Length: 393
Ligand SMILES: Cc1ncc(COP(=O)(O)O)c(C=O)c1O
Image (cartoon, rainbow, N blue to C red; front, side, top):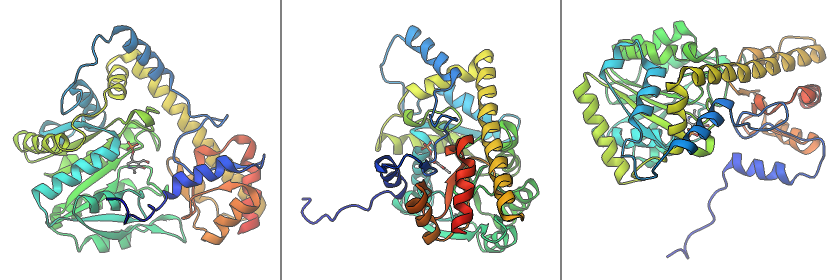
């Protein structure tokens, strides 16, 4: 059966992690894989998560199945975090999924069941998995321009011009905040323009929000998704607890469908459950049980929010430190965008040859499209990175 198979293509990000680990040099910096790291290079378990985990170990009495939609109290808490107070809140339905990855796939499968001719528009560039997941579900994919490599900001005019071609058979996938890979985010007034365009053209927005709380704050980062939920009839949302709860390996996320009314939203949820039944059946429980505890106990919620703010402050400090170090070396503002970008990532706009030089000559590992994970830096190696970036520029 397997004789005709050729070796699978290696995942570019995971293979970079292996190459970094095997690099014998003492001075090396891993800016590849998208996980938060503290100043010691560790991806810590958050205190609120640790406390919830202890509570769970002491009180959980069964490991029996939970249900196709996962934990309903978790679903409620996640929906509250994203949509409470919006018009869409009363006409939505939520399913717990194995990470936002699971949500992306379940929503893609749902789109295919509901409307097989759907085309999904994805930002150029986008999270590496967006295209393969949509295509694996049988959907067509097109790209809209997003990142201006000169200004390192969102090219909103080009984006809107292209999206004016999208119509009723189209779904437009947007990053809720902290765009992966570029770090360049849509500004509030531009969310307004996108919402108006969705209403005019009739396309369905799909917001993937994997970094709520890593941009300007929990509430601020939900601005775009809430604006859409207030104004459009149908909206798809995938959300992740990997980054903002640090629950990467626990595979915790959710798919939310906002629809015309509660009945149609529940119908969509029912379809997702049928699709999930034929895929992984049920999402893993542990991460969701932790999030449920954190979000339903005010003292744990407060600890979690503070920790998230602290993580954010560290990233912001690194962004400011790196752009200042670069300005001191090059004497101009060409790296100012690093402190304007949001979340963990920035695309530097460098060529592959420059990224290869960073790795070969300096032991600095960045993704081929010149994405760096700012959270992979320590204060102590800002100067080293700045020197290297200037050397290869
Ligand atoms: C934009 C985006 N969506 C979804 C995901 C998937 O996250 P999860 O770990 O929840 O599957 C990621 C992870 O990096 C991401 O960056």
